[in-house]
Every structure is written in structure tokens, then in C-alpha cells.
Image (cartoon, rainbow, N blue to C red; front, side):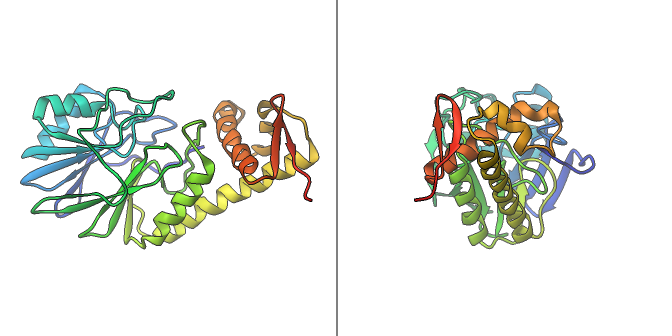
Length: 281
């Protein structure tokens, strides 16, 4: 489900006033680790402080080198936001984002002091950060556009050459595809993902993700036509032949997201946990 390049440096200055610190949580799903971004040098905003790893929280404060005033999160999955509450308690920083929905795999410790909506801005003397609501991977997922650079910080919404699990009920494939189109329309100069390196050609990366998801949808529809009345588990080998069997449990979650989208589109239906293609009228 994921594919990442070589290891990244732990700390990088990407542009004046924009720095990246990689959390020490590498894995199949997180690649080199979660990217934590620091905006500003006099008063600092931290984006996605990551998991609550004490050494990482200490490094965030060390590399900030100034007062941490704000903590932003893209979404409340366990690899992105659990350090936020601890860092806020240590620094007095304001927590901004969308609080966690009441579903599985969420960080319930994140409680936004300022609940952000699409188009809201965080402005300082050094930067302006605009919130862009991009539901799909998570219902409360936000990307953040650095207005001065015209960079979009994409969390798990866009990762170069990699797909993320869309896990219902909070994950929603239709919303995800719509949010990808929204991100493309912004015409940003670069994308800074939650895992992996900076993407300098946003249109290529976004188009690849859209094409990949739509091609997978075509495989789902073909499988329904050829092998109707199967459960999601039974459908996985038909749709994800290119995926290692060890990843089938994760693939089944994204498969369900595709099926729910097709159901919403009126071309599939579920009867007794078995999926069927709806005949065209």
C-alpha cells in the first residue's frame, strides 16, 4: 500500500523559515517516519508533532529555537497528533485543527482550542497558513497552504508514489477523490507530505493518485461482474492481485471504501454482506 524512497535526513531546512524534523517511527505504513514541520523562527508553529515519543518532543523544542506558539495537526491518526497535547502542556502553545471523530484509530487526546474550518488562516509576522479541508483519508483531515511559498502541506492526503488506506466508516473514497481534485485546483508550487520527500511536480503526483484509484475502481467493477455475491474478504484476491497477501487485511478496508463509493454511485449493492453489481436500466 505504501512505497517510499531512501532514508531521509532527520532535520532539514527546506526554505527560510520552514524546517522539517522526521519522527523516529519508521515502518511499512509511515516510511522514514512522520514529518513534523516548523514554521517561523521568532514565534514558531509546529505542524504534526507526531506520536508521543519523548525524544521527538524534546527535539521539536530544541530545533524550534524559539517560543512555540501554535501546534497544528492535519488529522488525528496515531502517527500524527498524539504528541500535540504533551507539547502544548510543556509550551503553552495553542492547539489548532479538527478534533477527533468518535471512530477507531483516532487520537482522542487531541482537543483543538481553535477548531479550524476550510479557509481559516493562522497569521504571524513571518507566515500565513491557510487551512484546506480535505476529507477522505480521514473526515477531519486538513491540508495547510503556506501562502508565501504557495506550498501545500498534505499530511496523509498526498504522498508521492504511495497510496494510503481509506478505512470506512471515517475514511471515504468519494470524498478522497473529490479532495484530490480540490488540491489540484489550488495549483501549488510544491507539496510537503506527512511522510517522504517534497513533491516538486504536484500535478503529476495528484494525477497519479487519481488514476490509480480509478483503475482500482475499474478492477472492483470487473470483479463484481465476473464473480458476484462475494464478501469483501473474498473479493480482495480478485481486485488486489498486485498486492502482497500480507497486506490483504489493509487492502480489504480500501476495497470496502471503493464498494461504498460504487453503492453511492448506484452501480453496486450489498445483500447479506455480499456485493453485487447493479444492472443498468
